Length: 305
Ligand code: CP
Ligand code: NVA
Image (cartoon, rainbow, N blue to C red; front, side, top):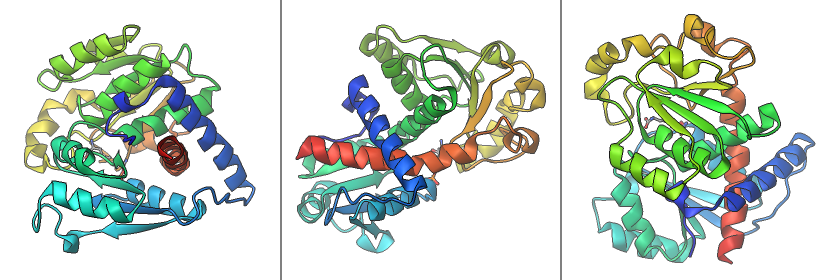
């Protein structure tokens, strides 16, 4: 049984396969063609946190592929009526694939351990693998190839940043992670990532100007992720010098694009001028979530067949 809990669950060749399926389905979609590659298949979505992009991209994608989906909200009683293991054992007898968005990463790991069908991580406190895949797909689409690209992350060393480390490690993209002091990527995580990806080109810094110099893309995310709302005021102070604004973008390469996983807190981590500028590819990046989810679903279900 294959799962996608983190990007350690896939190889570089499998990511390329996912991108190739996504690319093919995206161009067919643009021509009005929706190839029913997963007829009769059922996807369940189990979300402990809010979502627009992840939920809708999976649901719409599943419909395009000829399958269907079931959104399980509060009334399913996940985490309240029965154990995570029992929930996973039962639900996975009835559906083919389950996307779980959980407050704690350990919940998705526990869920996958007991599920009899494929489980996909739809975001946890530690990882957002589907997001990082869509981000790298977007860069590949924009620049034609990933080799030689330099991606600058300016912000929190959070779930999205961690998944980008692994994605870049797989695909050979240079990554600079720039955070305020105290918000760095977890040191043990970095140590393990360097072991897992011996060729990983990862630099960490606290200097945003140095980070974005010669970057092909500048990426930021909210300063306080879901679940960290009570830290928002403190974080606003700690991240004040890490805003992606026109002055910072001027330090990046002339062709550099701006990325954000969204939702954005405009006026905090990014200004309107940057996110609405011609350099910003955030809407294409969000739209690619759907094309890449389709690639993930088709690949994962074929890999498990
Ligand atoms: N980027 C992302 O995962 O968005 P949602 O939280 O809306 O799913
Ligand atoms: N880091 C953000 C990403 C949202 C898609 C969060 O976890 O809330």
